[in-house]
Amino acid sequence: MKKVLGLLLLFFVSTLVSFGQKTKPVFEVVPLGVYGGIDERNLSAYLVAPIGTKEYVCLDAGTVHSGIEKAIEKGTFSVPSSTVLRQYIKGYCISHAHLDHVSGLIINSPADSTKTVYAISPAMKMMQNHYFNDQTWANFGDDGLGKPLKKYHFETLSFGKTIPISNTSMTVQAFPLSHVNPYESTAFLIKKDNNAVLYLGDTGPDSVEKTTNLADLWKAIAPLIQKQELKGIFIEVSFPNEQPDAFLFGHLTPKHLMKEMQVLAALTGKEALQKCKIIITHLKPPATSIQKIKQQLAAPNELGLTFVFPEQGVRMEL
Image 1 (tube, rainbow, N blue to C red):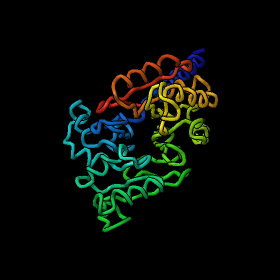
Image 2: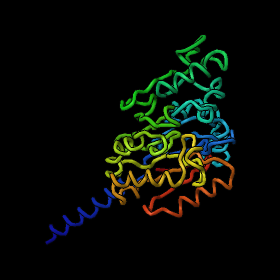
Image 3: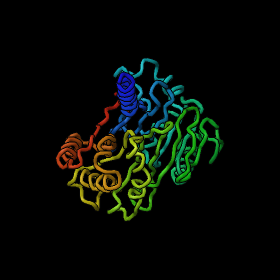
């Protein structure tokens, strides 16, 4: 009898430990910029690192220095901004080369340290031909026009191929998105061992873009959600529902996001998807529009999803 009780106790304790491991946060996120639109001090950029490290990759880089300063003001970092920029940020994953996603990378490049910039071929070519071209800006890369200064290594990503992120313990895999078809944007699956976060750059819904990019992405990540390995999905909602489809310009509204989440839930099951946080990015000012987006996401949340609205400079855990 004592042996049976001992085995039961051991099973109970191991179950608790296992449960604790499943719910324990794996990633630290520091938003350097959370909006789309006109506020150049607060544009898309998210630092992601395994908890307990300073091995950050910056997902998009619309705002960098102002975001670091805000994080210092909020108590997220207690070191000089130059330390965060030069030592903590190990590389950049650029979803597409529109200025609200790369301006921080460009402006801060003279003060930055040697690291890698990851992007798919169209985005990389746009940065090399139009920004780092020795005319618009000095070529801080190791390839392209003019005289390459070789501060940044330009690493072109191929869809479906997983590669390590230099100087970190994470990997990245790129997936195609449509941002006014045929212009390509990118989703990045960032993994640390068997845990992951998914970051989507700007994207329109499949129904408007006339592609299957999001449907294909949902099929690829559904098994990770079912196994509770995907800790969060960063996805944009730029406009409230009143924005006509003809004027979305490759973006999502609350109703389009919920339609896409219905597609994903059909693959994963509602309960599994409820355990994956949905981080809303790229809300476009003014404040009245942002507030309306938040209200519209809350109202029809039949899936019971957990929406997170990141704040610039405020640390999050996933």
